Length: 422
Ligand code: SDX
Image (cartoon, rainbow, N blue to C red; front, top):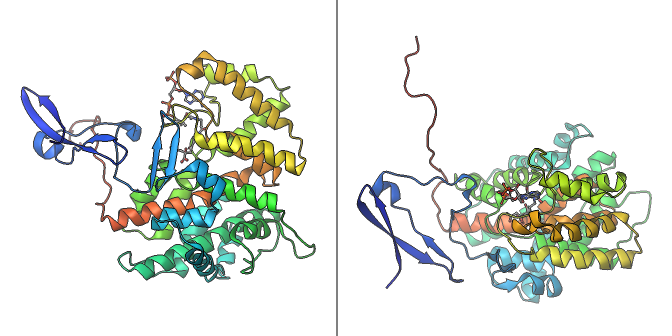
């Protein structure tokens, strides 16, 4: 006998089914609420509302659990590589060596970006933020690939996935090349995906360029940790835009814009800027903790808190360990890391943060590794986007395959009632 929820309004009772997911999460299915009662729910920020069912990612905020297609993030970060995890998220199963090699080679078929895209890039000022350029260039890909993907056709969908994975990486690095006045680099189909990222970013025609395996491994792990996170702000945006049957590039472009915000993916840049400010102000972490607690002060402790995790973000734990390892291996002494550790220790002891279950999130330590790898601060959120791309694609594909209806929330109107326009 399945459970139900009873709602009583004006003495009348209404019964709604309670559905249960594979991890025993329960939800009241209110699909018929307005038809039966004439009422809608109100839930700003959707803190209590599920937008869909999904088989892609499971996270438990209380227990600090994160799994992609049932595999624990800790295991994937240790044992898998980014393209393997991308394939798993998008197609649902771990690829064997042959399938993974084919996936990597099929991505290589699309790593050449139409040269006319450079004229669009030229239109931006050198000072433009890379995320603004990336959102625009991703949407511009539609102009060169106008045929929208047929999600019912397996091969068409597969090619769209490979095309998006191939072209997005290249244009993401072009945003940095533009800011430096460097010539645009091309993907080297004889090299791996993550090594290509570093070459596309930093290789200049006049100097030999070598990428250390330490850097490749660290980046690969960071991309895995960012790959998906169920219905976060940017993923919900990708699903919402895709629900109108807008194309994959247009939907991903919208996701890039949502991720840019400092409350979301933009936090990794904001964390580094905050840590640098604390460092430049003599390392007075107590002053910044006081600012974060002061309701009159808009300052928030960037990299702390999470809509869902009310325990440690499991990704933050992995990244914190990796930060130590990467800096040690690269022989980088970074006083910012000491500031981060001091700030984290102080916050975790502080009643304000403890009582609100505010812990470091994925963005708190990632910037320290990016900085050690020579990635400029305003490229940190682009790094997040590169990592999140397979998750966005997977969620968009699932939404379309499930034939989800167009997203259209209701509202409660509180403005002027009818008045004559005299
Ligand atoms: C990401 O959703 C995802 O999955 C996102 C993400 C992903 O992988 O896609 O995990 C990536 O976006 C991580 C979050 C990165 N953002 C930041 O680090 C920015 C700083 N954090 C906050 O702005 C905040 O914690 C949010 C936005 C992350 C979550 O906000 P919520 O859930 O809406 O919480 P809230 O704003 O209602 O805060 C609850 C209380 C409030 O205090 P009271 O009103 O109860 O007194 O906690 C306080 C807030 O003022 N609070 C903070 C704080 N975060 C929350 N106070 C100081 N510093 C903070 N960082």
